[in-house]
Image (cartoon, rainbow, N blue to C red; front, top):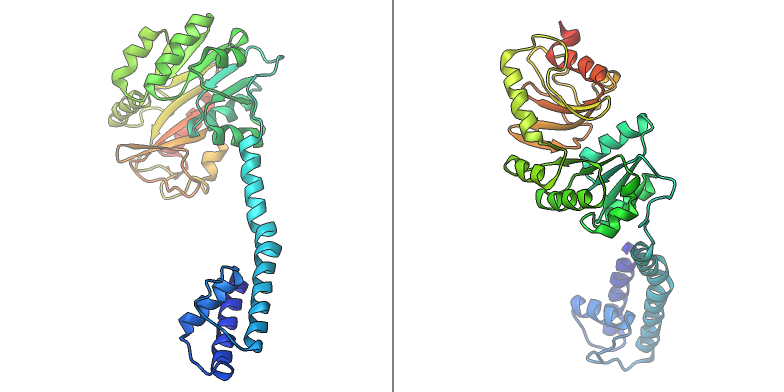
Length: 327
């Protein structure tokens, strides 16, 4: 692109000079640039007349340069690869049916940062799982990273059947509350499976239970419990309240106390945090929950960490959030 612009201005300067020397008339530099662009693109409106052979030869050179640039460089090197990539993304077949050997697995409906941490935990304990998501970009990302998944709307019966719901152990509805209610009703009508629903608005908790969810988990409700715990202070170095997703896998929110060794460190720098084995899947700050925080997120006093892990891992992390090595 820079070379193309250089050609335009260089040819415009030459055209400006040739017009004075051979055509005996002067044009503005803007007009010279205008003539070069319309000549290179072979538009040729004909509003700038040239009568001498030297200008005509020069216009031929400009035209050939434009043809070479557009059809010899721009199209094959820039435009064609872009079109090819777009077509490949659009027509690439994404998985729509789970593998036939998949059984006793966890079906996760909806992909987001919270699911990323859950996937790591399931992989660490070698528990089979399958992500079902209607978003093409999400599923493409999962396929590229070797994560079992299928594309489809989990509110459709055929999609859940393709996810082998009859052979599954659990189903997690992790989309918006209205969609989750539909998923819960549909899953319960197909087979007798344990269904866990993640609720966004706590007011909808009872409706998801009415729909047939065996368990409804509300991050906001957990946060309220943790605020109550926080007011009592760090009485013991163990996890007092947590939500169990699966056997040995829990999610808990741990407030950062003033004497915590983690204060002032980023999530990436906190070496002691990594050694606990627990994962930070979210951070509460100023009443807002940030899921999938970046590694450069600074841990501050009054921060609340949303963490996942085993009871032992979370207990070690709680020791750090309440004081840890700083004491």
